[in-house]
Image (cartoon, rainbow, N blue to C red; front, side, top):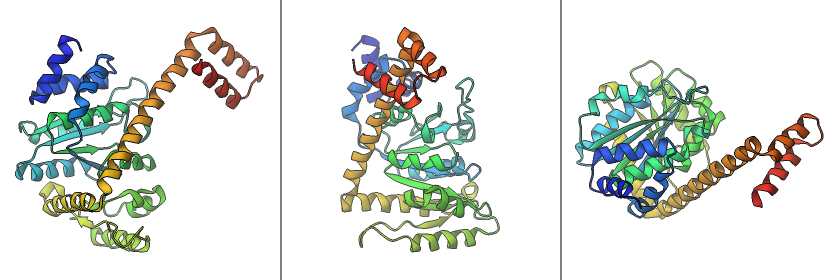
Length: 319
């Protein structure tokens, strides 16, 4: 390991915020030197409880994350927050609006906030997000909140990366019906109807509870997701949400489900890395080699079908 990487690694493990920020920038930028640091840090991970916050745009996920982080800090625990913002399809840049909305937490040394662009990854979660989770874990965060892009059905991807998945909805938006269509009903460990001061909150809550009751439980001892009412701007219902998070964490530990959740995340992380590397190698082959240009020419001339072309790319990558 180079001296600069060693310095960053030691700084992170000692709780240095600048080292954490630099490492997060490295993994987001795809810096090859980050891989060396992540290899060293990996054995210091696995202690944080990862919470995914997902739901439709406008449901108040950022405000809820801010309020929840304040409650966790009141318990003397540290919090890492990763806000995944939509990336521009043209520049790759992200709006990074969530960090602006969380300014009240910025001065708390027990809170580390990072906004990252989704970079077009499915569900807004990329290899960089997984690395960011591991960095904040090694940094010493007790809880890591991952707030995802509110982009519809692909939001269900968050379940692969979180120990506890919180689905945030709001009254009057038809979210409960959309949840059923999108498959979100199956991934939620806790359901939150935020902005509950609006008309229709109780109805939305009842509809979700009814759908949960209609969903058969895998076994008698399985977790039944609670449905909570919150008004994050007024910090109403936040204590109940924090209690539900703790209850789900205890359930995972007692039932042995936590170990399988961790294994699922490891597989998902490995597949994400493999997908990125294979895709990058295929792109380089197609764009930078005579074989790739010839393959594109043959497809254009309808001499070879796309699936057969893909088989040829795979054969070349194996060589």
